[in-house]
Length: 545
Image (cartoon, rainbow, N blue to C red; front, side):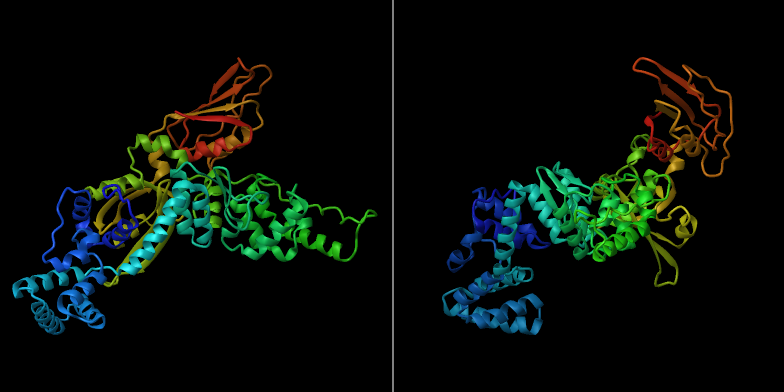
């Protein structure tokens, strides 16, 4: 399009027909002739009115038929048989058609040698000629959608996402395109999202009906309750107003995992675990309303109390994994986001960078990814092979590994794991085919590059949670001696999980006073641990050193 600089609808039709393997070799010729850099060539004057629109380049099947009609006296029915014979390369039929074409052309004053040359030219182009009526229809849709995307990009992408509501691969692509264009895609919200993708300014609100296992009918009933009584103020309010036919345990769990209840309770783990209690409260409220248990003013009974389990929120990696299960891709972030500094130190390519490198001749590279799926199957020789579904912040991709690699790295390549991969690759058409040469846990690789953590606090409340995350699941807590300042009690010194990193706690006592306490021992201080500590309520910041 940039080379062509189209100024008429016919140019777009031509490009739709040309932009395919085979005919795309003629795009430079078309563009050069359009802009007067090259003169159109017509082997015979009869061809000029037929090929003038495309500057002498045979593009459409209809042009092949018109040449046969005008030059050799074919009926349109005969011309269609010629087109089919040329496309299928049926030798006997082609020989028969050549005699018919050349004889007809000679009767119209065309020299026999020239008629033979023109027949060969038609046969060459008929092999991949495109039907113009199809190209015109595609061109019109392309022009309309290009106009909409150029002038109404937010609305266009939201409408495209609604069209592919149940196709998470497509939704992931559209979301990535929205990011590229600087358009914000807000995670689903029970108080803001609708059944379809909605727009406000430069923001797209994620559709509740696009979540896995949540049907449009259920969402329409929830939105109807919200529209009728205003935004939900609590989970109890939600349960008291929503029709119990709209929800079940699975729907509540999916909405919680996707973050749809964050506006009512930010602890997704607690809401997820309390799905049964929410459904039961909804049923009780409905039974009370239908049995006439109203207060003296005629309003529905008070919202039933919901007692949720008192559990800690999911760690960032777990939160994103659950979100992936509910949405189909990573929406609010990516598990590798915490590793950005470590990946830079490890000189790791993104999948997008690696793909571009392969297309320019590279055959291997180092890539970090989250394993989202693993499928094993037998090859024709009976050996096992693995097909890994992988993801990084630039996209989803697949890589294969064969029996030896599968046996060696099976434990490392578990779904949900963050891994550092050495990939080999080759280009097949436009697709990059990758295979795993080496794999290791990304946490282990990143920990080797990290010197330590500095954790900023305002008080001592988060200390127990920090200690647990530093110790790892196997370590026991212990008490050590520490400094204190202005009545601040030093934290217990945790037994260090195996590692090489130093950890310091910085207590921010006021705007001008900070007390830094270095914990004894060495710790494993991977980006995942840093992210887990940063998620602790009361932690102001975590610096990775």
